[in-house]
Image 1 (tube, rainbow, N blue to C red):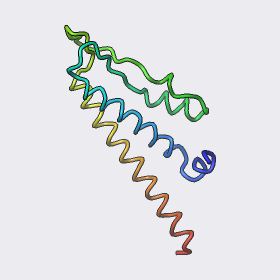
Image 2: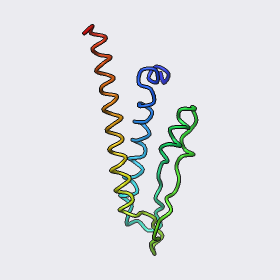
Image 3: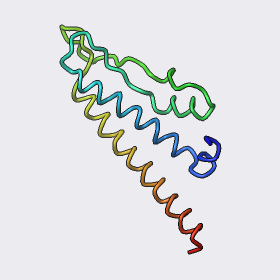
Image 4: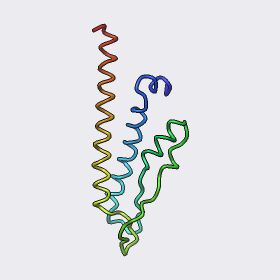
Length: 114
């Protein structure tokens, strides 16, 4: 099934899934901004996409974020960094989704013979 979606949608289907995974990770970071000793994590999208295209696990693309200014309670979440990364990721997610919607519309028209 994965091969069929890759043929139809290219890497955009995989990119959408990875963007969604990263969005959840960034949202978790933001939600835990006040949790003592919480370590912020992020997904290196380029590395994850390379790993996914090779059929490998994307776990190797997840890393702990190194804070610019460490907090006294050991929490590494920096709201400005997280919010910026979340906004950029949301925009890229929407772009991939728009491409896939266009592709689905094209396929639907082709099936209907329009």
